[in-house]
Amino acid sequence: MILPILLTLLALPAHQHRFFAALIPLWQAIPGRVNARNFSRYSGWNERTLRRWFQKTLPWAELHWGLLQLLVRLGVLEGRFILALDASFVPKSGKHTPGVGAFWNGALHRSETGLELSCLALLSWSGHHAFPVHVQQTQPRGQKADRLEQYLDQLVSFLEQRRTWLARHLRVVVADGQYAKTMFMDAVSREGYAFVTKMQCNANLLYPFTGAHPKRRGGRQKWAGKVDFINFDGWARVPGEDRERVWTRVVWAPRYARLLRVVVIQNVDRRGKVKGHVVLCSTDPTLPAEQIRALYSARFRLEFVFRDAKQFAGLNTCQLRRTVALENHWNAAFFALSLGRAEVLLEEAGRLQRPVSQMMFSYEDIKRRAYNRLFARRILRNLGLEARFHELEKHPSRPLDLGVKAA
Image (tube, rainbow, N blue to C red; front, top):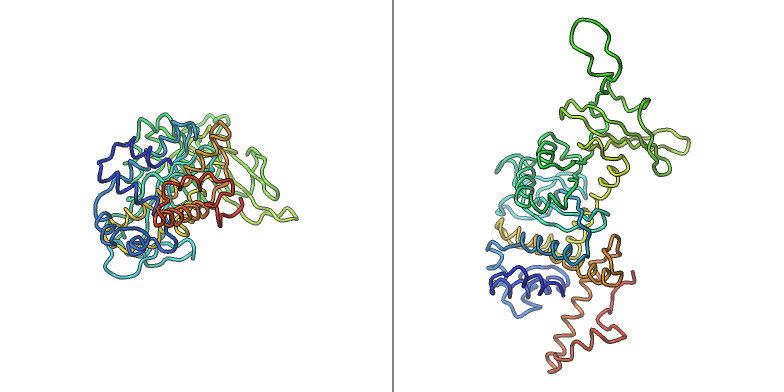
């Protein structure tokens, strides 16, 4: 188990060490809704115990960060990472929870009343493993600054706090189209990283003029025309998938006042007619087009983290109202998910004797095994046979894998 090693390395106070050592295994094992009432049913805790703990500020940032560093130190993950940022809608009823407001619900493609969390996650360079490292609640516009400014403050604070480590391991920051703003590009560029994002399909872009300037009075010509996304003369063709045409070129973006490497992906039908296009960009003009596309595709791994956390880790089942309690609940859900992934990664890396780039992972299976361990340990304890629990873990028939889906 990684958790005891991690808690020992972090040298947390004894009371926090005991709390996390009991909390996370239970969080992974409890079926159904993950809340204080359900904790009291599957443990010796009173439900008020968890509520009181979650009213305190807990060191989740150190736990997230310590887990990631431990995996790098053990050689499970390579030393290169991508930083992804995104927000997720969390349903919440009632009128007395701080931060309740109208937020975009991507699952239903409409704005709804509820809560929103903003998450920063470090992705392995292969794009197959995502580990949330910072989570905070987004406040509605009426209670605090614009939500984009809140995202920016979170990003800048994280980059400054972890600057030394990130300078050695981080290469690119990736975000979706809502973050395609000048303030995000400037903030990331100041730290020395490339920023990869998605632009509007009708983005205002200009061709830099590269020809010979005529001898005349006045300033020199700077631009050779506007990009219309129809005529791609002078663009480089990049290999793509079937029914795609991929083009790339360095152009000037007046909105951001900088040169960008732009990648245009056209979708075509069977007859070769263009049905639509997507525009990706990078603040680093030297970044290859294929890599820009791969980096932006890796961003979707964070969406899978949100999905697993909501379906299996109880992200949406918090029954607390204070902001600190909500953030504690969300962090616990993400950390339980990351810990399950880390244990599978460690086992796979030990088998392969090298860092793991790709891996089949199901948090539902992690949760099933954790419940089987909890149930078996409870039965053996009541029979006075708890000392023989290790025999179940090593038994050839693998009884603790009951109900686990075949990968």
